[in-house]
Length: 108
View 1: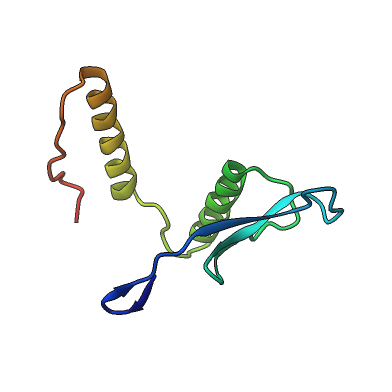
View 2: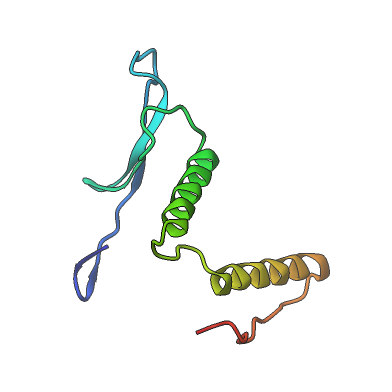
């Protein structure tokens, strides 16, 4: 976040969970706050989902929107780049050598 075009703000992220410490609201992620602003609000409240389950539900929701004629949300080029970088990371771990990414045909 920026205060203005040249002044970065340094804020802590705080995870807000409901239902902790014997609270009877039900246990779920409400969202994440940076400073005093919500940067993420869980759209599946009050479902008791783990973070990865929330991510899967979000992808499925976006896919349903896309299948109904909506916008693309994670295209082939982006997925290919993620896979390429993942392979480079594995190579660096396996060999212990420095690896460098090079521009790929799918990159824009």
